[in-house]
Amino acid sequence: MEEREGEQLSRFTTLKIGGTAKRLCQPQSIDELVALMADLKARNEPWYVIGGGSNLLVSSKGVEGTVIRTAQITKIDQLESNLLEAGAGARLPHLARYAASLGLSGLEFAVGIPGTVGGGVIMNAGAHGSCMADIIDSVTIFDTATGEIATLTNEELEFKYRKSRLDPTIQVVLSARLRLKSDLPETIEAHIRANEEYRWRTQPIGWPNAGSTFKNPDPKKGAGLLLDQAGAKKLAEGKAAVSAVHANFVINMGGATSEEVSKLMKRMQDCVYETFSVRLQPEWKTLGEFTENEREVWKV
Ligand SMILES: Cc1cc2nc3c(=O)[nH]c(=O)nc-3n(C[C@H](O)[C@H](O)[C@H](O)COP(=O)(O)OP(=O)(O)OC[C@H]3O[C@@H](n4cnc5c(N)ncnc54)[C@H](O)[C@@H]3O)c2cc1C
Image 1: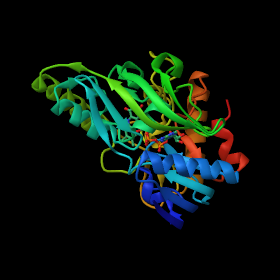
Image 2 (image 1 turned 120 degrees about the horizontal axis):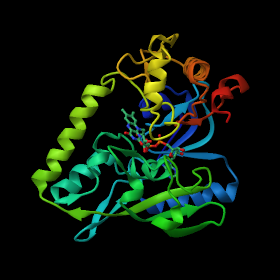
Image 3 (image 1 turned 45 degrees about the horizontal axis):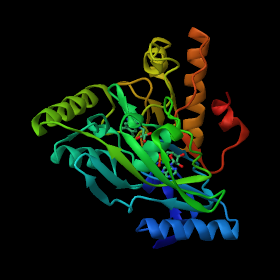
Image 4 (image 1 turned 180 degrees about the vertical axis):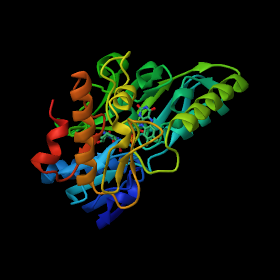
């Protein structure tokens, strides 16, 4: 297993923000991940698991404890003609393209979501009218509360909008089984291309970001539209700014800190509240040290 001390986490987040981790571990297989989790549990050490770091604001002040990055656990197996099993660190865009190459449809929505299977399950990642809940057959986890490996069915995972029943501070996703449908490769490819083109038109390609900052308050009220109408596109804090392309995207213009991003998020939240009396809730998770002030935006 790859193990380093004092590793800069900005390297591993799509926002390119994050101070040093006391210890970063990158298990190469599910067995190594399970052994690591069992050891951390036995020693009662603090830990945090990350996948693609694409839905995360990591503190610029750094992270105490062990950060586990699953990105090397990428094995994908075809168990039945339309059932794939993927390791927690398999990238969703790669998985979508691999499934397409087998003539399997269902993952086209995920082609522009730069996360992993583990993060996708935790967040119930979704786009273009579909989400992980539509294709998950079952998920195998290591539960640090019991010290056991368990397999949960789709129903047991209780997927909701951008969440599942799993608590990523207790349960670690090891792998997921995905039930897909057979279709013509050219039809699947056409969906993938349409989804990609939509993203190129509507998202700030080229700037470090972490996708949608806030959840949509309801299906008819997109956070991006509310932010845009409230005038959020002109907001910036230091090197962090609201994208001119999509008002729900925060971009790092180079050297932004987590403190600047937290302040900017609070101003975005306030500006929608003042205009529409709607309090937006962040979609992102946080990792590391944040002051009470910085945490303000996450308070319900
Ligand atoms: C350009 C861009 C576009 C995006 N578009 C979308 C979109 O259309 N739809 C959408 O839903 N999201 C989108 N996202 C957000 C993000 O890609 C998804 O939420 C993704 O599922 C996060 O996966 P990750 O592996 O990067 O998770 P991380 O950001 O690494 O972690 C997110 C959470 O999952 C937990 N986690 C990660 N792996 C595991 C594991 N193995 N076990 C337990 N917990 C784990 C972490 O602890 C954390 O709580 C976008 C992001 C970007 C940068």
